[in-house]
Length: 351
Image 1 (cartoon, one colour):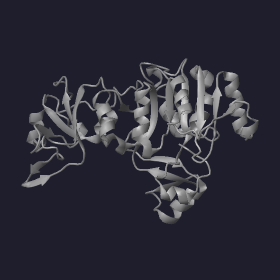
Image 2 (cartoon, rainbow, N blue to C red):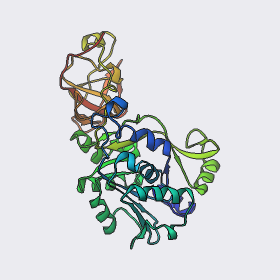
Image 3 (spheres, rainbow, N blue to C red):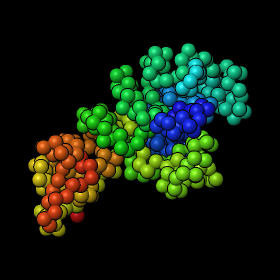
Image 4 (cartoon, rainbow, N blue to C red):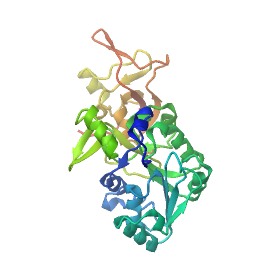
């Protein structure tokens, strides 16, 4: 995400968006898009071969996205790598690699802390590198795949731009972004899904020294931040990757182990008061044989891709436009954000 010498004062006056994705996080997720299924990847294998990758909203001088793709330029068979630096208050630069020789030079410059003014791959930009600037959009148009960590506060606008220019992408976002109406509409339409990483796990980011000091002084360890190998890391309770690249989740979706009748005998599957559907409180309890609509926890989406057996019907609200409700033991209950789904092929189950 964007970097520079923006001050803590500014960070507190606006939504803080300056989180640096750790290299281990980048490597773990990218492995699922750069290998074939025999190596733990996807049926599509290396989806980056022959592609131009664009890392915007970033600082190529310290970005682990840029570093990952530069280090693996030849291995992935990239056609190019473009990264733009964002600095809110002044004109900045881009760096562009078109060959493995460029990649080796970039890594050497990175490791030797070569000043940017002496880096032959650096080109000045007229603007500040904002992804909405015309020159940034021209770079976006040249790219095939965008991989980055965009500003969470501008997530809707950033995602809309990717679709406007018909780009493949793999980007990080707050899991809560799933609940945005714009995001969920894309998921329902089968145009967007989450990446391989579990969306319910915490995600750690490096931060500026100033923000690290502020976290330690004002927030609770283990909640807002963690210290890893002596480094203060911002802790996002539930972050995830969003993508429209092929990702293999065939083994992620639980195989139903009981019928609706068996679940009813255990007191499961109450019907909603305000929608013709049943409540399924745990994803593993999805009944095998039910052909109607079911409300499941939002964590279902971390296991879902468009060609899974389940169709996405609706999100969260009942027919009255309000949160789904059901009654149990005389008490009206409102479960936390439910996704309404339907099994396209009810019947398959294991014992």
